[in-house]
Length: 382
Image (cartoon, rainbow, N blue to C red; front, top):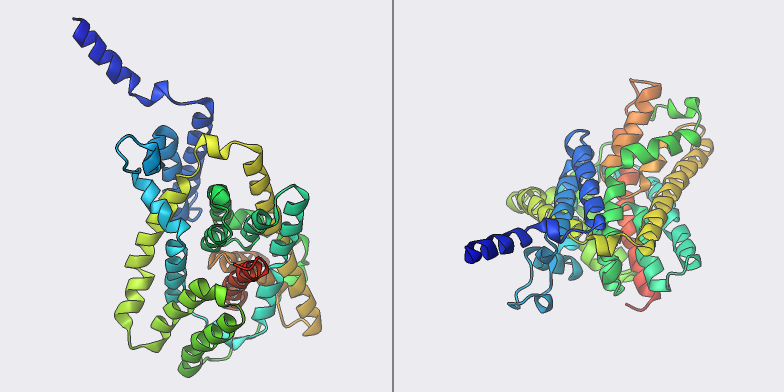
């Protein structure tokens, strides 16, 4: 009888109930909220579902991301090996290849002024950098945190790893991906604050047709120019442009389809669950993490505002030919930010079609955020 009792006691104490802290319950609740937003509200489910589920798993069973040194048999947890691919910059670079294979750079090529709008939206990154310094972060940590302002999860992970800020990588990545998913909520109030109804209703002229030759030359030229000036951007910009060359060359259809579909979705699963698994209560519920989340939000808001205000400037310079709303799409959240520009413009005039115009600054923002990361790496001699 004592054997049965001891066995039942051992089984009972192996359940998670005896090991969970109040912090674990808080993070489990956050995971449920993320799942609700993704499944019920449709907020970027491809990002939020794996992130939320990784968050749920690690707060129930922390050993799922334990390193080999922390386990009794010398074998790490499943998500530890997924996360190692983040630290080695493999998954972020593959994500960029997939994005390149999925993206049409035609709107950017047709309207090169979009590069300026994409650059203006990076203001939030450098503004947040100095704010992070004031809040007590060291220079490298400040740079890793500030890149959240570009609303680019892969670049945030990439830079944190390169700058040796792996301890902050989890909160940084979760903040970046969360703000990417919440673009439809965060951006519209800022866009409306800095624009008038008349400006939001501006209809832009149709973009000129872009030739096949231009589309083929674009990734080759951008890679050559950017990577010569900032060689450290090669893993991101190079993979982005390689994916786009797969798409536009027309001779490697199988590679283009694999990069934009099967590979992309596999990488999203690995990256999303491993990022979510960094949000254990011990790692996430602290003052430093709260500072990171707050700074990331401020940086993203500043970037949105800067892009919109620069759009207003171009609107005045061009005599009302540019709708300022497309400037907000200069952040790197592709294609969510462009869709938001379209949605806000359509609220003023349902016949106004801004999506393709907004895609120019949007893809310019992807390049711009990668360049901003390269600038930080160059500054610190990485």
